[in-house]
Length: 382
Image 1 (cartoon, rainbow, N blue to C red):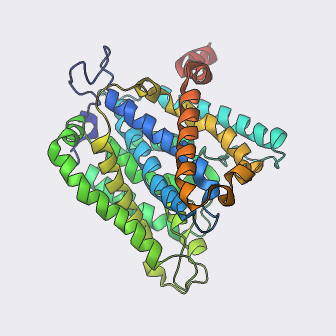
Image 2: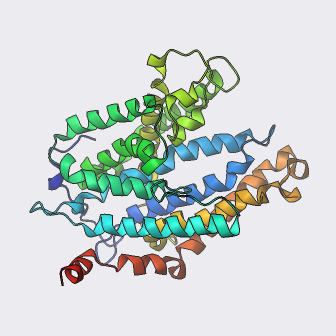
Image 3: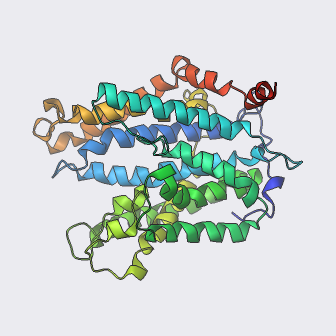
């Protein structure tokens, strides 16, 4: 894909027949993609406690790494793609969208915090600016929308280069922390920006048979790179490092390579790998996403609700160590039945994703979305 000259010329709409879009022109493809990705988010959290369970459970660690290399970069790419309407053709800004994200974040921050304090018994956070749990994604969206009016005036190619370099260099900031999700905001920004620059016509090129054929060797190369890095730089050796920290993008290079004796000039190379591998996996995923309506398509519009609400279950899952129950233990399943456990986790994750996508769960978010900033500003002036 090539980057368009001006992002303001983009359109998120594509002319397709009724097999690929509803009566309002909403494309099934994007809802399908978002649902599958949010299912992968839930699945990654479901299998995460099994990563360190010893022999027989390495497959869960491989699954976790693969899923996490794909799902957030791809969700962020799609978010960037649909950010095109933020800046209108006349240059004005649709300020309602970032305002709604701010409302979602504040509501989620306080409710997740209350859940952690009053249900899980954790210490209370003293700052609303430190995203709790996985709310960093909402903070990043707010950041990116604030920056878009300025970025839209810069040449796309130059801006992509700046974004990638910033993502590589932010890792050298030893003091980078969870404050306003700055580390993840900068590191993931290239995915959002690329989605913002890619046109709908360019996205249509993913539908071709040629794209599917290309995706096969690309997928093999991406998966192979994950295996090679784990084998060559696995934890335990002098020059080893935690590839998980590069996948989650939440730690500085100083933290990852502390006392490893690695040349600091090489510290950014794993992040270069992450950008390349995540981009390759995103391409392969989008090529194979169904274009037609499926039984789960209608839930694709409610992925943000699932992203926020499943956090409560995940936090309780970790706090009460549900994964340590006897019927989950390796001795009960044996090595032949690890497949059963994987299928069970997939079924649970799918069920949770469906349930949290139902309207009663989505309703609070719909109500928050109805709070219009223009009305609030008018009342303030009055």
